[in-house]
Length: 255
Image (cartoon, rainbow, N blue to C red; front, side, top):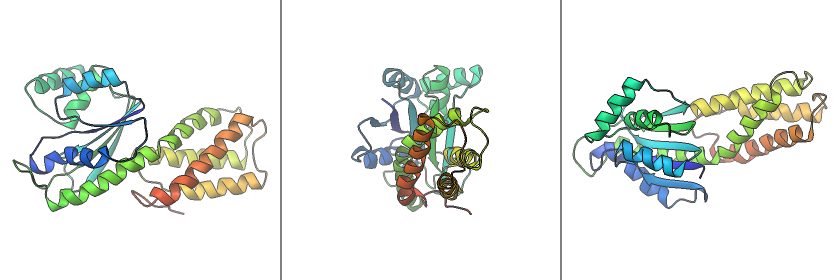
């Protein structure tokens, strides 16, 4: 099961309950047969056990966290193979045992138990209102729309990220002869790495257009194999598919 989307938060605590509201909106969405959407408010140790059962390839967490941003501001974090300090893990397990809830607490516990997927994305909203209550603030309600859209975009980009991972391996080293197309491809992969880190497209579409021109002008590398060509065209096709869908969601092209 490749993807688990989880809402994390404190139930019925105004904006801190945003994770539950996000899950309610996403539960009925057509995100694909291999995407599971769940509330993860029931304790970090229990969530670690759930991850051990599901063994997802990637995890996407959504919630409201006081991280110092403007009220209603959304922050995106990408974690790859985190290695928390053992003392932090022990402290997190103690906090979890007495009922504390939070995204960082969950991350520390799950990483400490070795069940956190190698790729985890966190979408966090700075709350404007905390404390008991069913209603979120206007800022949190507005951020909820952005978060739900961002989750959809993360799911849409999965095939692209898989192709990028494969191309990094194929384009590394000196297996392929230097060429303008190879230079452009490596620049494009760098832009897409930045997309994965920050959620911003940068100059990815401009690099794609240049790559097309390099291929059309036969400015490609000697020694390219069928798999190279298949991956190059798969990357271009994925970018073509995604551009009208979410290019303007969290970032735009720059020349």
